[in-house]
Length: 195
Image 1 (cartoon, rainbow, N blue to C red):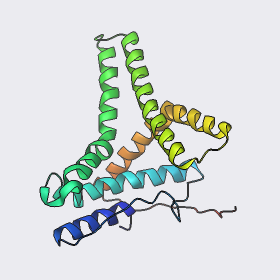
Image 2 (cartoon, rainbow, N blue to C red; image 1 turned 45 degrees about the vertical axis):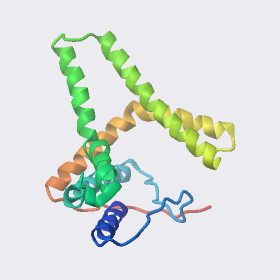
Image 3 (cartoon, one colour; image 1 turned 60 degrees about the horizontal axis):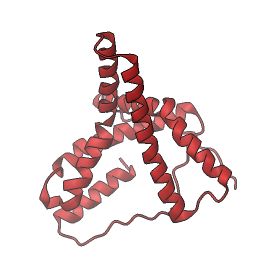
Image 4 (spheres, rainbow, N blue to C red; image 1 turned 135 degrees about the vertical axis):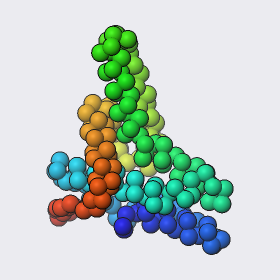
């Protein structure tokens, strides 16, 4: 697969196994970007592919590097972080939702507790998004108009009311596709970019 994550993992592994000095740097001002999907169907296909690709990379490449000092910080921190917070994340989210539902159905909790738990979860996630937005704005000033910044704040909040849940569903579907050996990219319709 030609996914960027796969290439980066293979580069790290190759250089570390062959003791080749190297450096992978982050460039915040990219020369090219992934084209944003312009329909729900294409977005769904893309996110399923990303979920499938992440699981594939962790099983086929990451598993050999995880918690092995030979692979330095990449094997000791980056791969475990990715496994916990990216690959397994949809399962944690789904099990949390099912646990809350189960507790409520078994009369082991009340709606008051569920609402408080949900609000704490919502605002802690929103605080992380705010922090990321603040760091980006401080470093790059991408939103010179207050109106644009306010839109980003609103979208950061709205993202937790449906989009995150759909994203979990797409990633789980991507994992199922991987397990069924479905490696199709699907149809990725491109549109012209006019500036």
